[in-house]
Image (tube, rainbow, N blue to C red; front, side, top):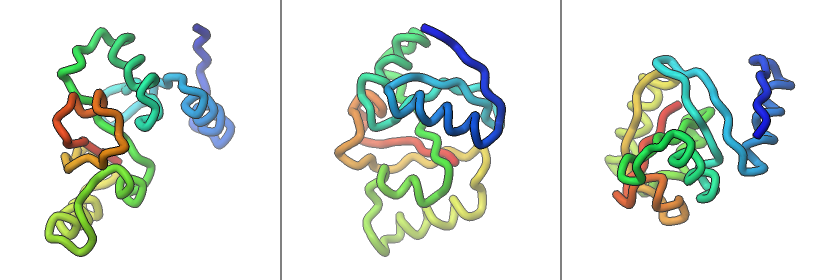
Length: 124
Protein backbone atom coordinates (compact mmCIF):
# COMPACT_ATOMS: atom_id res chain seq x y z
CA UNK A 1 0.00 0.00 0.00
CA UNK A 2 1.31 3.45 -0.91
CA UNK A 3 0.35 6.59 0.99
CA UNK A 4 0.43 10.00 -0.66
CA UNK A 5 -0.23 13.35 0.99
CA UNK A 6 -2.16 15.83 -1.13
CA UNK A 7 -3.10 19.38 -0.35
CA UNK A 8 -6.56 20.97 -0.21
CA UNK A 9 -6.34 22.02 -3.85
CA UNK A 10 -8.40 21.07 -6.87
CA UNK A 11 -5.64 18.67 -7.91
CA UNK A 12 -5.54 17.13 -4.42
CA UNK A 13 -9.31 16.64 -4.34
CA UNK A 14 -9.22 15.09 -7.82
CA UNK A 15 -6.44 12.72 -6.73
CA UNK A 16 -8.42 11.66 -3.64
CA UNK A 17 -11.49 11.17 -5.84
CA UNK A 18 -9.54 8.81 -8.09
CA UNK A 19 -8.45 6.79 -5.06
CA UNK A 20 -12.04 6.54 -3.84
CA UNK A 21 -13.35 5.62 -7.30
CA UNK A 22 -10.82 2.78 -7.50
CA UNK A 23 -11.93 1.31 -4.16
CA UNK A 24 -9.13 2.84 -2.10
CA UNK A 25 -9.19 4.62 1.23
CA UNK A 26 -8.40 8.26 2.04
CA UNK A 27 -7.76 10.08 5.31
CA UNK A 28 -9.29 13.52 5.74
CA UNK A 29 -9.80 16.13 8.47
CA UNK A 30 -13.24 16.91 9.90
CA UNK A 31 -14.26 19.53 12.44
CA UNK A 32 -13.54 17.15 15.30
CA UNK A 33 -11.24 14.29 14.20
CA UNK A 34 -9.45 12.83 11.21
CA UNK A 35 -11.55 10.37 9.26
CA UNK A 36 -10.75 7.36 7.14
CA UNK A 37 -13.01 7.33 4.12
CA UNK A 38 -14.09 5.09 1.28
CA UNK A 39 -16.80 5.11 -1.35
CA UNK A 40 -19.84 4.38 0.84
CA UNK A 41 -21.47 2.47 -2.03
CA UNK A 42 -18.52 0.08 -2.44
CA UNK A 43 -18.98 -2.73 0.09
CA UNK A 44 -15.43 -4.05 -0.29
CA UNK A 45 -14.00 -0.58 0.36
CA UNK A 46 -16.29 -0.08 3.37
CA UNK A 47 -15.19 -3.44 4.77
CA UNK A 48 -11.55 -2.32 4.33
CA UNK A 49 -12.23 0.60 6.70
CA UNK A 50 -13.44 -1.84 9.34
CA UNK A 51 -10.38 -4.04 8.80
CA UNK A 52 -7.81 -1.22 8.84
CA UNK A 53 -9.30 0.37 11.95
CA UNK A 54 -9.91 -3.02 13.57
CA UNK A 55 -13.43 -1.73 14.09
CA UNK A 56 -16.16 -4.25 14.88
CA UNK A 57 -18.82 -4.66 12.18
CA UNK A 58 -21.38 -3.90 14.89
CA UNK A 59 -20.17 -0.26 15.04
CA UNK A 60 -21.68 1.64 12.06
CA UNK A 61 -19.85 4.24 10.01
CA UNK A 62 -20.89 7.82 9.20
CA UNK A 63 -21.18 8.86 5.56
CA UNK A 64 -19.70 12.28 4.82
CA UNK A 65 -21.22 14.18 1.90
CA UNK A 66 -20.03 17.31 0.11
CA UNK A 67 -23.45 19.00 0.05
CA UNK A 68 -26.84 18.37 1.65
CA UNK A 69 -28.36 17.27 -1.66
CA UNK A 70 -25.72 14.51 -1.86
CA UNK A 71 -27.37 12.83 1.15
CA UNK A 72 -30.75 12.42 -0.58
CA UNK A 73 -29.82 9.26 -2.53
CA UNK A 74 -28.61 7.68 0.74
CA UNK A 75 -31.59 8.29 3.02
CA UNK A 76 -35.17 7.09 2.69
CA UNK A 77 -37.34 9.92 4.02
CA UNK A 78 -40.02 10.14 1.34
CA UNK A 79 -40.96 13.24 -0.64
CA UNK A 80 -42.81 15.98 1.21
CA UNK A 81 -42.90 14.10 4.53
CA UNK A 82 -42.37 15.69 7.95
CA UNK A 83 -39.13 13.67 8.20
CA UNK A 84 -37.87 15.14 4.91
CA UNK A 85 -38.79 18.65 6.08
CA UNK A 86 -36.98 18.14 9.40
CA UNK A 87 -33.92 16.78 7.60
CA UNK A 88 -33.84 19.79 5.25
CA UNK A 89 -34.25 22.27 8.12
CA UNK A 90 -31.52 20.67 10.22
CA UNK A 91 -29.14 20.39 7.27
CA UNK A 92 -29.71 24.03 6.35
CA UNK A 93 -29.18 25.22 9.92
CA UNK A 94 -26.18 23.10 10.91
CA UNK A 95 -24.32 21.89 7.80
CA UNK A 96 -21.51 22.04 7.10
CA UNK A 97 -20.71 21.19 10.67
CA UNK A 98 -20.40 18.46 13.28
CA UNK A 99 -24.03 17.28 13.17
CA UNK A 100 -24.74 13.71 12.12
CA UNK A 101 -28.29 13.02 10.98
CA UNK A 102 -29.37 9.39 11.39
CA UNK A 103 -32.06 8.38 8.93
CA UNK A 104 -33.56 5.27 7.38
CA UNK A 105 -31.05 3.96 4.82
CA UNK A 106 -31.88 3.30 1.19
CA UNK A 107 -31.69 -0.41 0.41
CA UNK A 108 -28.77 -0.09 -2.04
CA UNK A 109 -26.33 0.88 0.73
CA UNK A 110 -24.01 -1.88 1.94
CA UNK A 111 -25.49 -3.44 5.09
CA UNK A 112 -22.10 -3.37 6.82
CA UNK A 113 -22.05 0.44 6.55
CA UNK A 114 -24.93 0.66 9.02
CA UNK A 115 -24.10 -2.49 11.02
CA UNK A 116 -27.37 -3.92 9.73
CA UNK A 117 -29.47 -1.35 11.59
CA UNK A 118 -31.34 -0.14 8.52
CA UNK A 119 -30.28 3.43 9.30
CA UNK A 120 -27.40 5.56 8.07
CA UNK A 121 -25.66 8.50 9.70
CA UNK A 122 -24.84 11.34 7.30
CA UNK A 123 -22.79 14.47 7.84
CA UNK A 124 -21.79 17.37 5.64
